[in-house]
Image (cartoon, rainbow, N blue to C red):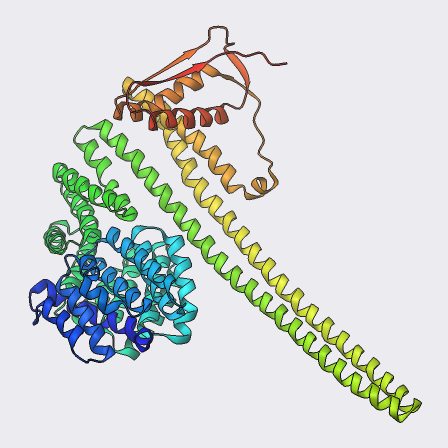
Length: 601
């Protein structure tokens, strides 16, 4: 349909205005009247899609129910493309409200609708773009990167340019999040150029905010403030965007140590986004309010807002916001004397940061995979084109040779000799062309191998970046153990030290890619006490067991020798996994660890 070729561009330009009208009560026509008009009047595709937008925005509290109304289903029953567009639009409505869990469900329905109809690469690109945007916000940067790159070729060929600008902005956000600022600035500049070409204010604001955010992370506060104020001038009249930019300006106040000025700005923005049910921004702003309260010494308020933001983030799968809120809780608990809570939140924060760091590595690998796949596809296309060319040339040569042969038979021996000489010359030319094709294939192979070397270099760099902070943690733990501390803190320090040793072994194995590929993981053979290993495991897992109200104990056979030869770190890892699974799948009672001696032949 013609609607498929331009509707997604139109939706994005119209939806922001319609959602604003719906939420402020300015919508002129009741939704039922709009629906009746769309069903009864002879209207153009443009007006039909406009009526969908107005209808869904007018009932923005439950767009899913609107799409499933019998009257709307009848209107959309003509093509799978119409149904797909309606679900995409419903997803955009709930995304504007920050309800990403419902957006995921609507995008799944859009994908199912698309599969039922003929494949439309433009509509599929729009679906990929929406999926990537949701995944990027929820923290799955690697999958989001793959989907952005999958959509880019179609958007670059066919547009719409507004979607292409959204893809550039999305990739720039991911690279900024990974602190790859040069790549981020390249994509922000591409988005800015498209925004100016299209006269799209939202794209221009996104580009300005992204560049300002990079300058803020580089602590170039004055330059960042200038760009934010330029974005604010463009956002005049859009209350949601004004609240976003006020939040970012308040972040500049925090960097400038002006906490009392920043606090009311954060609190006002939080009220705004809670009223809009935008859970992503609400969770993020809770972390900012908690951090400022902590800076001002009000740790009770800091704990209250940090827990509130954490609950929102965990409920809706907002991994980055979960990390932000977890970062505010250990200092607040420690300041209030809740050392158990501080330790619990510190462990959760470490796990969240590890997960996000893994996303950074996965995203970079995803980009390398995309580039490698593109090179591989290029090589395959070159090989296929070369084969087709050779087959065509061979067919032409055979036809020509057959005609020459008939002519030579009728013309005599002299022409036969001349024809044979001509054929030999053609064969030599074909061999030369084949040799040239092989050279091109080898050149593409070398290029692929260089890409593999780039991946290896990246892993080598990441090895240093990860091991350095890990060694710092181990060093600080050892220093704390040597320094004067409370007796009851000894087991916490021992647990941290043992966990750090285990984690360093795992990190060394993961980052030593060469050993993993060769299967060359070597077990140590050193003296160690089995009872000490079991006690360390129980100490580490005791807090997790207590959270579920489970008893945790161990029974070590008295016949077991005190000292054994083996790899204590590997044994510790195995026991941690076994005890952790036992706690995870035990609802009541307890978990016991039994160690006995078995003689083997």
